[in-house]
Image (cartoon, rainbow, N blue to C red; front, side, top):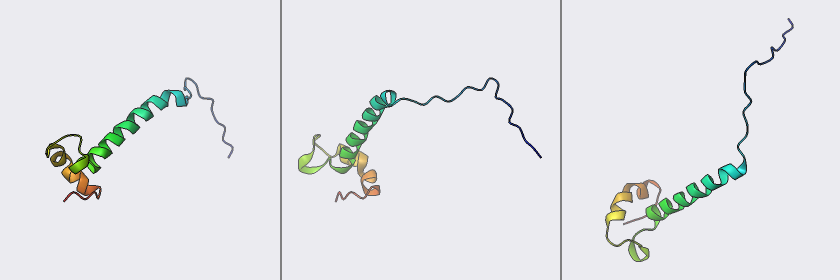
Length: 71
């Protein structure tokens, strides 16, 4: 049985997104992830930017989930 493909009518082609359009968002999310990694992994003790235990308590469970020691 022979099959023929019918031409697409009204279907639009998917256009690729350029690297210039993605780069600012990639940099933004990369910096955001580094800041979050700092707060979860290193914000306590002598290297703390924020004094007190507030940040430690907010990220305590995430720290254990990711395998960072905290006590």
